[in-house]
Length: 323
Image (cartoon, rainbow, N blue to C red; front, side, top):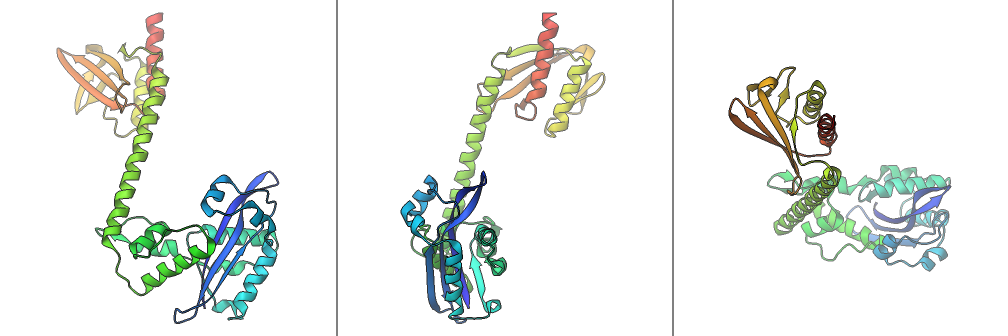
């Protein structure tokens, strides 16, 4: 027999540490021909339970009173095993399926807490890991960990995932059945998933850029935004460190000269001004270089990797000016 299983869980505090604890268990059982035999559902009262976290409360729509009045895991597991043994005594002939690694890990950990035998869960197959790579766009895997909602849309299975253990187990069964039967994937939904992921990546990147710009503006706000750079050995060392940390930094600083775009510029004949451009969406450093009547410019992004070195160069130049 085949059992599609889903567990909902929440964090409980045990001995001053938070641990994931099962609050509900749902399962759908199929025979060898893929026909639904039976279903199982039970709430679970976790060890050291006080109240549901706000996130889990909103997501599952469960009530604290329901969980408080539920049986603890040993009783629920005994009921679950009796349910299985009604149809199959030999656990080696039972195939378990879940979605993602969390259910298996949490079930085993919770069983271990109560000294229950939950090792059969270690054989549970992660269908998220198996099915996600089968969904491709332009022959490329969209994601190795698509959500259950995404997979439902790919196989045109109606309804949103509602984070009820039994309902989610049914959804998992339907997705796996669609895949095993070779149901055609919905190309329109695949494109929609790709577009959502691109939009999310762009939004994350935008927030990261905004945060970087804000941090750099605050960090360098008190410093002069334009100052002359003298190529002292300690200043050269800081530029070298930038090169070591950022391979896109194209300038190479030697003992007596700098190499830029394949040309050498000797420090004794070179004047360099460093300018901080902090108002741009992507803050950057501009090096304004004069060499034998030529005016050259080189710019590079101001990042977490090079900020310390740039700040050290500015401080050293300020100290020299002050002395």
